[in-house]
Image (tube, rainbow, N blue to C red; front, side):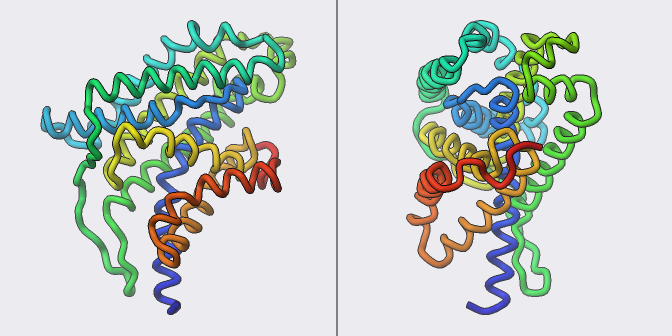
Length: 289
């Protein structure tokens, strides 16, 4: 492998990892605050992506215009679902995580059936910025660069909001200690509702971005959920900085494996990594932010 090829793989992997950041951080937010194992995460991503495809092709909407629409729609959907299917599970001790896994598994099935009815089974994508740049022999996809930049900026806004706003600090406090947050006067129930609504909204934005760079269908939901869990497991469950680093690392690893061993091995890699991480390195690269 030449040095130029290695750099090309590195660039492709970093850009790919940039698109993974938002997929993972939206799940990380929900898990960090609520300790909810959200198996419906990929379903939210896919529905937003397929809606973006529908809006572009049926309504003539520009893909980037769909971003605020799916964000608001995701926030509303998450805000409506959380009090009815998630909040009743809280406060049940160790059973909460298991119950949340079962409930979100059922929710994912419902979302899948709704998406099948609304959008069908075909793989689709939104052709956007179908051009490349040649920088010193390195070929950069304009669409991949744009989605990585948007995902990165949104992740930075999330991180800034968590560190420097009252709502964000309340989210972090609830993620560290429910009892401690309550003793400080924080309405933990409201914080959980905000976390779930914001997590679903960010997952929806991730779906609208992803469909610009890779084909997506209803059946993609499970793979996207696994990918998100790989990232947050590698980064350390609940760690926002760790998940960001892990997303870029996974992108680079996938790009290298895809080049060396082919697309079939690349597609199964997240499943293998999830098993290895959980068995050998369950704490990830960081325990907390």
